[in-house]
Length: 83
Image 1 (cartoon, rainbow, N blue to C red):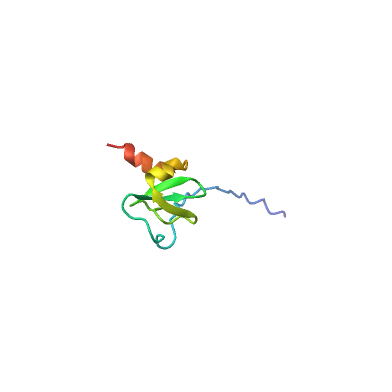
Image 2 (image 1 turned 120 degrees about the vertical axis):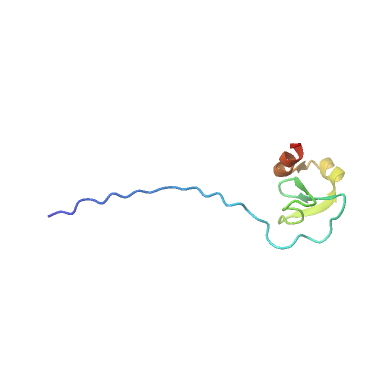
């Protein structure tokens, strides 16, 4: 007697896990300074979870960051637009 085939189901649940910065912020920075991710050309303001914490980056004034073509992090820009 043959065994009936067993039905199997597979589910592809996508779990989006938020990436968190590792370790302490880089030394430097301070009032009026932003952290520029030199790979993505995105800058982060003081108080951001990424301020001083991306793998490659440097501190500079917001004006200098804009002159170099960096843009404000999308998450921070969204918060800025809310009343």
